[in-house]
Image (tube, one colour):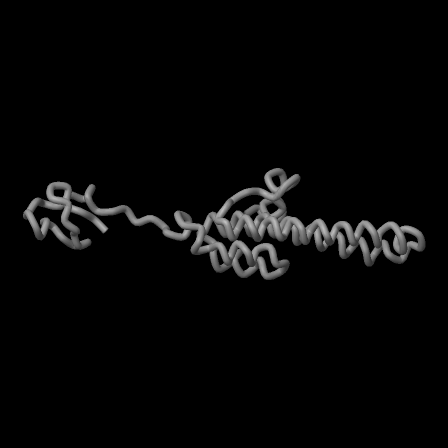
Amino acid sequence: MAFCKNCGARLNEDSKFCPSCGTPVTPAQSAPRVEVMDEQPDCNKWFGVLAYLGPVLFVPMFVRKNSKFAQFHVRQGFNLLCFWVVLVVARYTLGIIPYIGTHFLKYVFGIGLCGVAVFSIIGIINALLGKKQPLPFFGDKLDLLKLLFKM
């Protein structure tokens, strides 16, 4: 919405003159168009939450391509998803080795899943609060989405 620089009256987008005082409207008075989604992360906070729910992260990845807020959380959630996939693959491929698979990996797998759950909860809380805060330990150091897909 634009306003007259002389009297402060509200101007229509196609106005050439102010309806109140008749002052000519200059192009500098027209308001610049700003993408609201990036200015107000509240619009995208639920897409940020979806990014931490495993494979559901592909919904905000493709639906909110232009939102820096949603894409930040997609990158964080993708790191967690990759870590979870590595845990599952290690558990069931190395699980056939007698001692390692039955005892050691069972505990590593359980601790790893608890870690993924805790980091997901931290990410969900950050998304709901409208923060673009990286996850602890690896969130600002690792970007697997960029590394794997050159995005």
